Amino acid sequence: MIVSAMAVAILATPASAQDFGIEEFRAGVFYHSAYSGFLPTGDNWDFSRLENVKFSALFASPDIEAFRWIGSPRPEIGTTLNLNGRENLIHANLNWQIPVFDTPLYLELGFGAALTDGALQGATSPARNFGCSLNFYDAAGIGAHVNENVTVTLRYEHISNLELCPPNQGLSNLGVMVGVKF
Image (cartoon, rainbow, N blue to C red; front, top):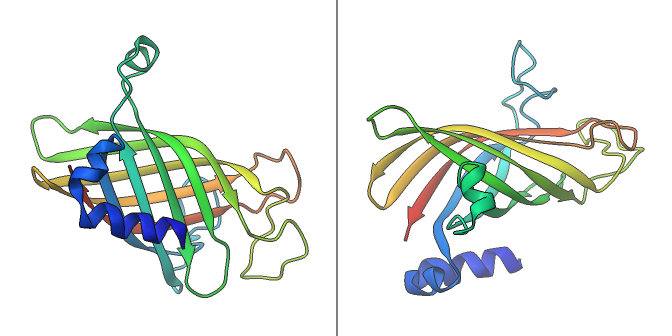
């Protein structure tokens, strides 16, 4: 609820988004638990649950040497909300955007942490068992700069505890986001 209110406020006043250092706001729809593993290879896809909405804010890369040394990633905060009462998550990560030659296309990678409200254990399928609420977060995508103010990104996101607190079923979502740059 809080993130949705922030999203409405930011979209209503682009100047206020810049006051917070936000470079881009994104919103999109995602397939919930679209893949039953970490790396999306093979035939373990399930596109039966188009039931997530996702919001994220990408901030300007801090102008400090440590960030320049690791490729100037942009900090990102976001949430993925499930409209059917399944697992939700909030995440904070670093996001690298890599241009594809001299085209409007880009590749994207993100690494960070996520909190989920999903079951720690005892859930029955299609619900997931996470083992712990705090998980690692990673994302990958391919996108395009539609114009100087709009992006479209096909994005895969995954959360997992890396077997630190069993069980570790993790969660992999796939969707499309539209971004507005400020």
